[in-house]
Image (cartoon, rainbow, N blue to C red; front, side, top):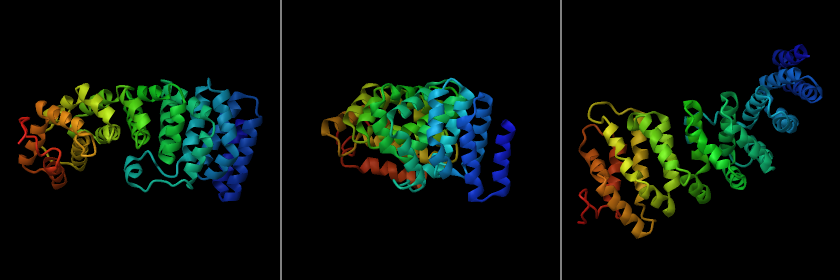
Length: 358
């Protein structure tokens, strides 16, 4: 039977064309549904995965139900589950959304995109997301990584739908937070990216995630990755922190009370501004850090919170460190502009580095 599966896949690949691809996909789905041997079903799923990218629509429209059924009924078969998760990632991806440069700068998909439509179908039953979150909880690499990637893809396609469903699934956020402590960087980094997508413009999720020790975990990642000298994951962590802080008074209070303002000083202890060049990523990281600080003293916040954060920034030495950037030779213009913006902002210019008002 496995020989037949491979034959159908090769036939579609060699003959090409939408019609041949459609016929091959339909035949594979029929056989996946009807076979009794587990090994044959696995072979069929592998063949379907090979065809999925070029025949995405037909795989999604004809195969979504059987794929979800396999996840539910054969969840103990790790190899089968891993292939199904990979197929779902393929059919829901309008582009390489986990390629960070594209996902952060490209135009976001609208509700009519195929990825968004397929995501909405998946989320029609909250049980599907609950099941996926159980796979996120699994430690095995072949299960956890594709599950996290699929979550990222769906959160990129339909952030509001994913956010709403997450709020209705008990324990889902804790499963996602556990990913941040995974010692396999590729999984952890995608977990940070997932947090970036689900924390945008949702105060309820922001509060739950913040009180799940997100600030502590994210700042630890920033420290371990070398702060300003770190890679793109440092930027991602700072973007998540900014999402959590933006116009969220309770989260800002938590950030301050947990000593996170003081922890930001580690950036300058690790920084080698005077002795190394400013790479593009380093510039972005520095601007992202300054945006975190800006969120702490935003003019839209209540005055008592702003004043409290000002005092904490000053007493911890953070204000002095930021002002020192102005005197550092070779600081890039975009970083310098951000520092000057902070220094001249109405809510911050009245506080000197020593903590005294002018």
